[in-house]
Image (cartoon, rainbow, N blue to C red; front, side):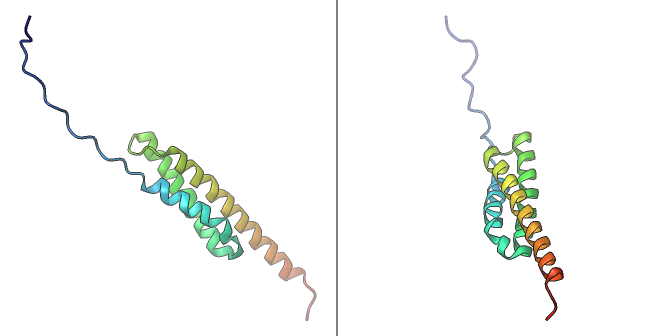
Length: 102
């Protein structure tokens, strides 16, 4: 028995994955931890990493990216870096205000 239908062609090409946000989040998150020594830089990098990590996780949920691990790691490292930077700022201010006068 022969097939009465003509052979079907290939489907449209798959859309490329957009993994940029997760990758940048991971890079900034890792960089934010040692940047705590310069508290404003660590805080800025940590906040940016957390925001980009959250947006990266949303892209994975929509099916536009496939790097959930990078986005989660960047989000967590960003939160840790931002938290350490805030702690560093608070301890620095306490040190300034509690030091004896010169």
